[in-house]
Amino acid sequence: MSDTSPILLWFRRDLRLSDHPALDAACKSGRPVIPVFIRDDLVDGLGAAPKFRLGLGIEHFGGSLADKGSRLILRQGDALETLQELIAQTGAGAVYWTRAYDPDSTARDTRIKQALKDAEIDARSFGGHLMFEPWTVETKTGGFYKVYTPFWKAVKDRDVDAPLSAPGTIPAPDSWPDSDAIADWRMDAAMDRGAQIVRPFVQLGEGAAQSRLGAFLAHKVAEYDTTRDLPGVDGTSCLSENLALGEISPHQCWHAGMRALNEGKSGAETFLKELVWREFAYHLLHHTPRIATSNWREEWEAFPWNEDERLAEVKAWKQGRTGIPFVDAALREMYVTGRMHNRGRMIVASYLTKHLLCHWKIGMRWFEDCLIDWDPASNAMGWQWSAGSGPDATPYFRVFNPETQLDKFDKNRDYAGRWIAEGRANPHDDALAYFDAIPRQWGMSADDAYPDPIVKPGDGRKRALEAYENRNF
Image 1 (tube, rainbow, N blue to C red):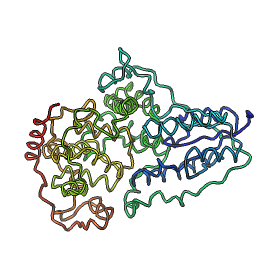
Image 2 (image 1 turned 90 degrees about the vertical axis):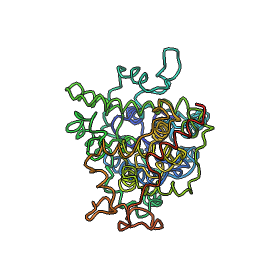
Image 3 (image 1 turned 60 degrees about the horizontal axis):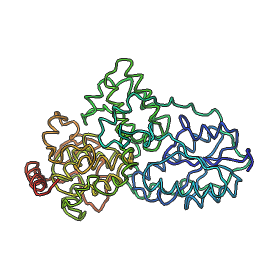
Image 4 (image 1 turned 180 degrees about the horizontal axis):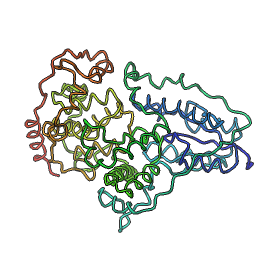
């Protein structure tokens, strides 16, 4: 193997040029760098909205590489076989990538790394998706953390690597291998007509992510500890969309947040805690991968969740027709924008799992299909946290009242008014957009009457508590 052989740089959820350890190492080697994205089974298994958003991200990132005199090679097929084909075609002697932490990705990457090393190919994985590798954060007794607050205390004073600069140039090979065209992949196919509704709400790429971060820290972070709970107020960073695809790194967000905190913007500490909440989700996914597929608290396996998605109540919940304004507004926001306010996520999840006594997996799968900021760790932990079956959960017997929550966090009904059209003389454009985004077979119209609650908050709470009392936790 020659030291001048190309390096295949396999991009996944790390679509950025700055603060990219694998890219930095490849460029500093002086060897030609061939950026690659592979549409394998894991990519094809994505839900409609995440896949649509990934397609946009890939296309945009290809343009960023072109601006550096490079290009993004697109290939489709089994990841190992595709890499082996590219190695044969280009003479590459190394493959670099950024680590992933979900069980399916780690199993794939472990298999690939061993196969490449057996073939005497230099296979290296790098950090970058997390600030703290999950195996480096341990309790005093050497175990992993199961509760967020001790985890936060353990990492809040740790040194976080300073962000790396984007490379000035990316060394190109003498010739480029063939590439698929992103348009031919039709990553938006499952979105159908919803794609054109969601697209204006997308903030695409590394530049947009940095602008988002800058605007948030300049104008919103000081009051973040309060405004983040108000769904009718533009008070959050909205960076989850960009973090999900690595268009910005957590290191960049952390150091910017620390600067804001040092400037006296007290809400910045809450922002830093939210970044660490994301880290905690991956910490748990690494140490207890069952969190993505089964009840984290094993005693919940015997709980009689409804798992039938054909149930009329489940259909009404998915359609944002529960008759509970906070729940319906949040679900409709997701269908129009591809995102959902964090307070809305908690209320929506609580209503499904507690008032309706439906399995959290139903909601987790729905979010996986509908969110452009879908993240495997955050989605799994968030649903189990809300359901009471997960780590660091609210007490299982705590049942959010979606009506009093709306009174508390949306007093003027700005949020509900923006997203619910029925019964309003002049509905908001975003409320009307919902009916353009949903599947036609739902047969819904803004002229429909707004439904009565499918389960009233008081009745749902009573039913949930009775179910809990009959189980041994």
